[in-house]
Amino acid sequence: MIPFDDALDIVLRSAHPLDTEPVLLHDARGRILAQDVVSDIAMPPFDKSAMDGFACFRADLPGPLQVVETVQAGTSPAKAIHSGECAKIMTGAMLPEGADCVIMVEHTETADDGRVLFTKADTATNICYCGEDVKAGDVVLRRGARLAAQHIAALAAAGCARPLVAQGPRVAVIATGDELVEPDTRPGASQIRNSNSYQIYAQMEQTGAVVTYYGIASDTAAALDAVIKHAVSENDVLLLSGGVSMGDFDLVPQALTDNGFEILFDAIAMKPGKPTTFGVSDTACCFGLPGNPVSTFVQCEILVKPFLYAMMGHQYKPACSWHPLAEAFKRKKRSREAWVPVTLTENGAARPAAYHGSAHINALCDAYGFITVPQNVATLAEGAMVRVMPIVPSG
Image (cartoon, rainbow, N blue to C red; front, side, top):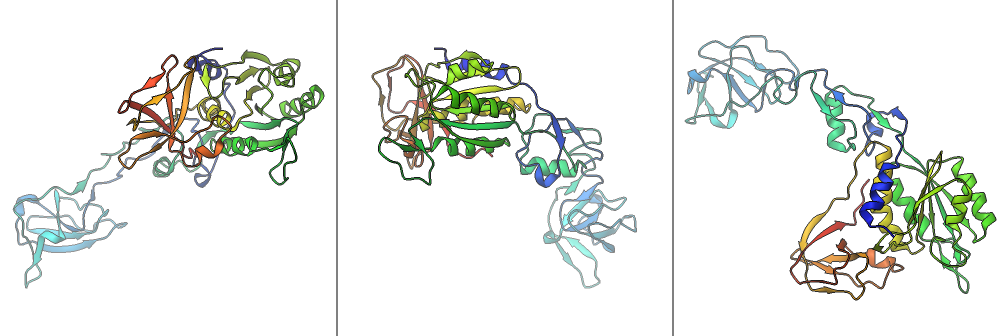
């Protein structure tokens, strides 16, 4: 049994880089950028007005100023500005030659002869200068960025219409266990519905992985061998749930070994998720995940997702925040790091949720997130600051 940090280090060091592919901008959200992107132009590409107003000489204020033309966005000024003159200008329009400030429409009044008077004591320049945001040749986004809406806007502005991104890892999801039936089947005596596979599928899709479900494998060496061989031939990563503990029918570790996987660890000092197993072969990597759904959920968030992102060149860490503990937390066993679901009070304090153990997946439906209780710590005092990993979609 190894500490979680050691397990994560082993997993990340085992991630091999994936191939790349260009995508259209409207397909780029959530993808991992595979190259630095350089802007081909300055931004703004010219001095432009930040306001609707009048472009003029500051030294001429308060005027009156003769309006020589109107400049709208998308057109070039026809005239330069001389002393005593101004140009009516729209937000985003190119600044006329000679002007050194823009006075806001709201700060002016128009005389009977049509000339403009400035009605304030002073004004900001109200000009966006060429290249003040980005200069031509500047790197606007670095390789490894996980693309969100704001990044896609930056790519578009930089002229990158088909960004090069990492291909999504091909991920196989496999359930194991004679007790499992699919969700559309009413369980018989001693049976339960397979919830893990659909949970894992959804979590992995959030990363941009290409996920395939291979069904339920029975607790026999032959069935496991067949599904592992099939999945290895088509995928980069295998995710098996169940069959990794110490029972007579927990056959997954041996089946992986028989198929050429080297098991790098088979137990983590944390709760839930102790029997999590990780192995590598020449062509794929495999996680053997516990059968209980909360265990599987946690391990997918904090171990599998960072691994898949590392394959795509992105350093992923779940977003966390700090909150005071609403009430004291106590536990009897403290040999493992514990991940405990919590809710948030109206005042933003974290309160341990009603939670019956790693099979209680419904507890996560109303939980805000998880707190971690370190190994060898039995009690957390009321008001203690705790780090909370929110349960939120990451895709």
